[in-house]
Length: 282
View 1 (cartoon, rainbow, N blue to C red):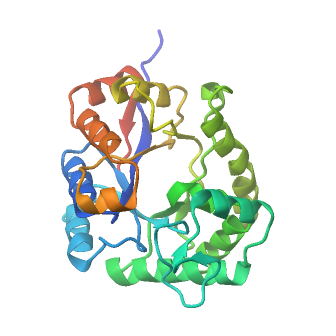
View 2: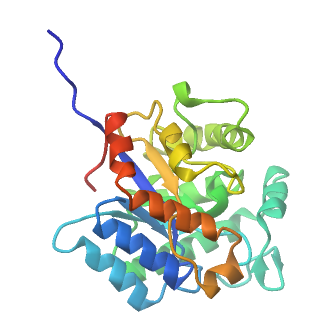
């Protein structure tokens, strides 16, 4: 007679805490309801004040509800925390496509990258009183050549207990027609090899990338992310509410509301159960 196996435990991480007060509030609401177990914080964003950070940290008292990580930010319209960082455009990081082009051609400056990464890590530690549980990257910037090497070196030296996000899908969930996810699969090969050489832990699988302009309802998209996820797999998400600050900084607005509504719904826990999954205990 077969014995029923318990659920596999995964991470559901809300990116972009700090990008705006309304996004912050939406993420905290979901953590309070037990619908998220991780969020990553943009220390280079305008809305990671002491008050917003304290409101997030209080959710882990008296018991820990969520892992809190650093959302490394190296693309516009955000500004560096370190002095003399280049290249910039009007004092801001380059847009993602330009940053990627320079990284692929290895035209970034490793010393300046490491200094900026260290500055954001230090800002996190100063704000939260500890090192981050993990590190990932806004617009997946941490996977880029040169950036990933600088990041892993800084993490190894300053936050050796933190794990780093890789964005390669589980083998059984790879659909080659998905160009965005395929690009992340390829970029993740490099960070997995480099992290292994430094003894830095990574999540075993990743899901959650999709075309934010899609007309497909998020409630139909999300179950696809759960296919084939192993124990410890990670799903990226971007729930939140919309305010003027978000609209001024990021094109991803109403889709955040749709994600929030799904994670706040009764359908979300049913979808987890249908895939024999549960959120990991932080």
